[in-house]
Length: 420
Image: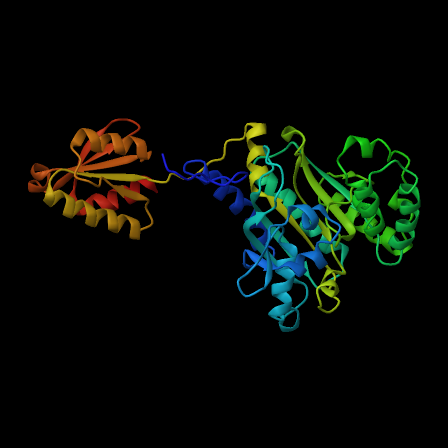
């Protein structure tokens, strides 16, 4: 046993389970790549102010969950708690909004960090795949992203998830609702921290998960009753486009999400098989975020889907992913000459796109065949001095147990033919 363990609230991805995470990331990314989204990767840490301004100083993420630290040079940095602010910062810094057509469509994958009480489905280090469409205000763009996420989940075999949809209004109608909600909240029996949050961003109180708070919100004013005509029309078009694409959703008038930058469209993907941590992803429109972090007006929309939560959702539904074999051919040499010959054949197989492995460490036949079985290889190639003297190797089908002699110079072509 090592002296060290993974930090509390984190996890290691270890074979064979890590293959599931790779498959989930690939499935989520595939429809994005097919829809004009280019890959972007940002640093694991950013200036603290980027998240304070963008995510919101009143959010739990900034006030309680962000890993912030000061460098030796005096810079205040934070491990990224979410992806949108970082991606928008990178796009602005690279002037992507000036060098091509809008929207700038980007997707990303990586680890994110939040200090919170660890529990199943909620970690201090977690993995997400996200997508952002920057620089266009169009209901079709909101609908596109929701449809692509739905497509990704269904390609994995998930079926028991739900899409929740709402509108948070814009700079015209939300201030009116904000005032009405603050007036309502001031009349409730809330603790000082919650009342303080209500003065900064009252919508955050609606997202409070505590039962003592939620039971007082039954008569809270609803944002849908305050939407201006433009926001109503925008939201209705998003709903119509999603419906026309055959994607089912539920209207959730209390859905606000946990970040301050959302405007108009907001949505969440939930899976009821995950218990209290039912959200597997979510997103929305954030038309004012660019100005918040010092950029020009760039209306944008995006989402992030949790890889960890998606894997848990697959397990909850009993979905087994069809994962490619890590090894198709395993070579077992018996003797030095066989080691040289079979190592060259393994290298050739790999160059030809066939997953192949080799028995390292000069093991005997019995130990090497145990390794071959553990590798999951479909075929094992065995050769000793007598085989090489006859110009052949022994090819064993690990499923049927059938073994045949194949010419040394024909073995690569034979395996290519058998493996397709």
